[in-house]
Amino acid sequence: MLAIPAQRANAYTGSPLDRAGKLRDDPAFIEAALADDATLFVPIWRARNLMRGVEEGRPEAVLLSRPGAEAVRMAGGPWAFLGLWEKRPVFAVDCSTADDPLPLLPPEMGAFTDLRAVAGLLPPGEASVLAHARGMMHWRVKHRFCGVCGGVCEARSAGHAMVCTACNAQHFPRTDPAVIMLVVRGDACLLGHSRRFPNSVMYSTLAGFVEPGESFEEAVRREVMEETGVEVGDVTYHSSQPWPFPSSIMIGFHAEGLSEPITLDDEELQDARWFTRDQIRDPASHGFSLPRADSIARRLIEDWMSA
Image 1 (tube, rainbow, N blue to C red):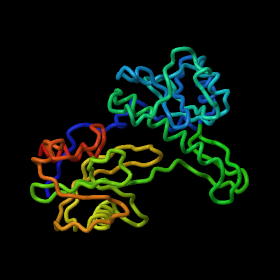
Image 2 (cartoon, rainbow, N blue to C red; image 1 turned 60 degrees about the vertical axis):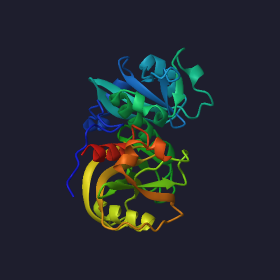
Image 3 (spheres, rainbow, N blue to C red; image 1 turned 90 degrees about the horizontal axis):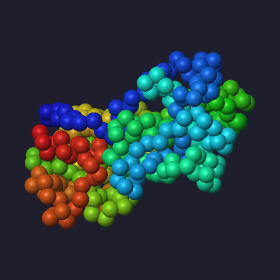
Image 4 (cartoon, rainbow, N blue to C red; image 1 turned 180 degrees about the vertical axis):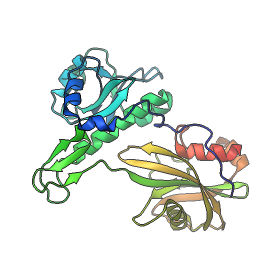
């Protein structure tokens, strides 16, 4: 099976940040950056990002300067140094303890919105920074206690490590790898409808988490077999997409279908079918819809269609 290259970047990629990892462990730099009026802060409230222009269909990220962020920081939530944006320090700060954080902010700052609802409309760099901040703050909020002994953890490395105050175990942000694959056989591709999809007619690529001791290619073959009973041959890499909802990365593949009959795992999928290129070109007339335009699933389908 020939490799099908990615035709364009995926959402949440293309970060403009220099992550400047060495600066995380420079207390003097971090202290000075937190006090610098040029520093930018990305506020997170209950897994939502601050944006304006959403209702008008022109969303843009709202980053706060240090004076505007002071009230949010005083809410006492976790924070983390994300890196440098055009040499300006950027921090994520969580204000989830506030019942309503908007009164804490300067007026006309917009509203807190689910990033997934508007990511395809944001400039790629902004979407990447907001996703980065969301993922870091999710980890900080969920890892206050040690997974080894249950002791209280304290932040280190400007929010990029948690150290247990009881047993001294160190904990770091985690990203769970998940494979996502378009299985192709001849002039048709295999798509499934998950019971979890909010859209009752949407069909998408198959996906699943990588298990311990498993390569990505092995995960592709296992997941397809478990969910549909279809045997997979060659597996070729396409692209990846950060997916911090809450803490995953999607590794995308095209895969060769060696068998055609479908044996459905009805716990995972409500339906799965082979769709021809003609059907994919006009899904509405065939009674189904495709994944969102900003998803890696849609990229896998579109790049196969154009190959």
